[in-house]
Image (cartoon, rainbow, N blue to C red):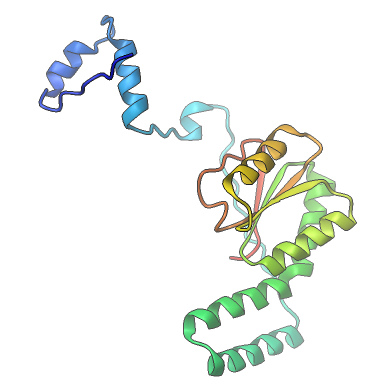
Length: 193
């Protein structure tokens, strides 16, 4: 196959004439499109029977003792670190404080909805807490985080998508922000918003 040259000087009428429905150049057009652009389709345009997204915000009321600990942590961190680090530390502390509630939600989803679940988390302490719980409950799962290379991530994604015994995947928000397809999942839980 020799490379097909794209003449950018042609106008849209020349393009239409060259690649109309009756043209024998459809394969050429297909090649050009595959080599030069990414076509992104929305699920609603591909799967007409796809139900609409249901979003549910689950408020969590932390005990006063936990809130006091977080406020104390904020004061200590404010003195020691800059704003960016402080926010990260507080978000992590809040994530750890919410962990018992997150685990309760996971238990309910696992035992009542029988769905494949993607769990997004931001911090290793939260991801570790979730992993520990799932192991204790003998719930088969995989995990994707920043310590893994792309090949490892794709192996775990493939396992999640193809193995019906694997019901959950824990995904670091950063590691899972692009280049992954979790098509078998029907439920997503963001644990640290």
